[in-house]
Amino acid sequence: MRDEKEQAACPMCGTRLVPAQRGRPAVYCSRSCQARAYRRRKQHPPSPGTPPAPVPVPARASGTRERQRRRIAEALWRVAAEHGLHAASMRRIAEGAGVSLRVVQYHFDSKHALLVDALRLLHEENERLARARVPADATDPRALLRAVLLEFLPLDEQRAHALKVFAAYYARSLTDSALAAVFLTADQPLERFVADIVETGRAAGMTAPGLDPQHEADLLVSGVTGLGLDVVHERRSLADVRAVLDYHVTRVFPPRSVTPA
Image (cartoon, rainbow, N blue to C red; front, side):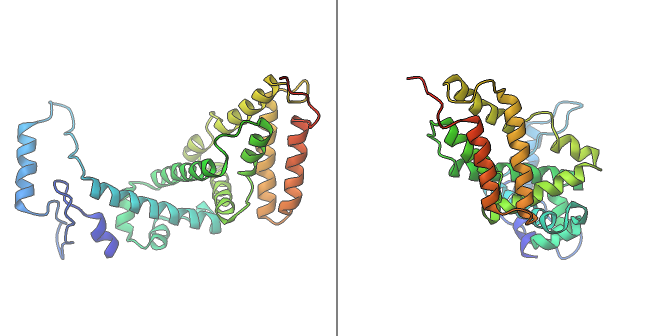
């Protein structure tokens, strides 16, 4: 009940609404706010054939809404990591987030919308954490490449959790064409980023001769992702995987390469 109270707010002033004991839930906190909304609609009527403009949501109400959406997404991540996306029903996610099913349906009008938005939030979270861990002023392409590839390994609980969630999305995308269209896009920003690092090193004369940056990037990204899953499955140790990663980084950036002045 606490979460339902938090998510209901007056669209005019942001005051939290008291849930109705029966009948339809209240939209405005008072008759005054209802009258203000009515006058606004009268002063700025929509053009014929166009939907009315949405009433601006106060910042406080908007912040509460985003926090709830985040909690629901985190609940989906937990279910996906522990049981797979096939077990992530809307009701189960609601229970995991500590809200009612009605609150989940208020924020996400369909299961597909929830899966897509939770995936977007996970990408944003991973990128934010990776930026904090990878040195922003790294000028050595070899060190930068190694730091970026390490982000694909389950070096801590957060990265292990994210890797499991992505694996669950991949498995679901094999039988869900709508999700596959979002999850398996033609755009490959990670591969392009790694290719740019290799290209920077090649331009500086630091890489082994004859390398194709894009082909190297495809191999490195897919390879380190598979190695990370091996660690999650306890088929390999982190020490073994680090050794494999260092081997391939050294193959691309030989230590005896001569860097032009």
